[in-house]
Length: 273
Ligand SMILES: Cc1cc2nc3c(=O)[nH]c(=O)nc-3n(C[C@H](O)[C@H](O)[C@H](O)COP(=O)(O)OP(=O)(O)OC[C@H]3O[C@@H](n4cnc5c(N)ncnc54)[C@H](O)[C@@H]3O)c2cc1C
Image (tube, rainbow, N blue to C red):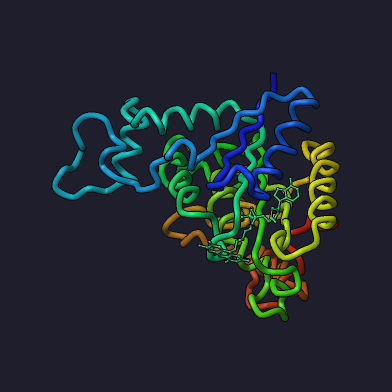
């Protein structure tokens, strides 16, 4: 049975995030998916990346380096039980939904801790296996989140600036870095400051989207093969690719803007091909 993992971070069972999560559980279960939920606050999930995440002796006890130590521990089956349990869920899932309220333009700390601790080197990425060559290239992921701000506040001319810029670190730097095909985010704008009828419409729209979610195309990112993939080459855009891009009015992606106009909605909408 195909599995969907919902990594969920909200403290309250009566929250709008809980309602959004429950719509996904119901709809995806009805479609025949096995839906697994990691309810991070309910689990009291440990958010800080520390020595306690490694079972047994450290490779270098004099200078603790979390990334190195967890990579060895993953190789040797010495990661703590809570990390191993989450890694098993990710491994089994064909889609991971991150459900959360936006905190400081990002995920709540407990979810950031999940990313820091679960997506360890070896398990989730390596320098050979990243971005479109990434470990999870056959899996999909989606950020589904609520905001305090309205949609207009997150426009390029709105007071918070462009939501596409805010989403780049999570969607490119974390999810796509690990190889995930990143689906367009599901954004619930300002549920606490709208009419209750609007909240019901938002839940209905989410339910409708879930019906075709697995068939959706992913967002567009720069391809690994466009870069010189070695330290000697600096992992920079290859000269011939740079040249090809010169006539384009827009940059490649929100992050790979090449000093040009940002491609509109690059992190929020699937680009026309
Ligand atoms: C530390 C921190 C940092 C933050 N940073 C940002 C930021 O950078 N940018 C930003 O925009 N915002 C930010 N916020 C605001 C935050 O994102 C919002 O408060 C949050 O997203 C609202 O979602 P919620 O699920 O908590 O809403 P709730 O307050 O739980 O719900 C909103 C409304 O929905 C109702 N509701 C619940 N269930 C249902 C249902 N089944 N059907 C219909 N209605 C229902 C509730 O009763 C309530 O009236 C921040 C907040 C904090 C605490």
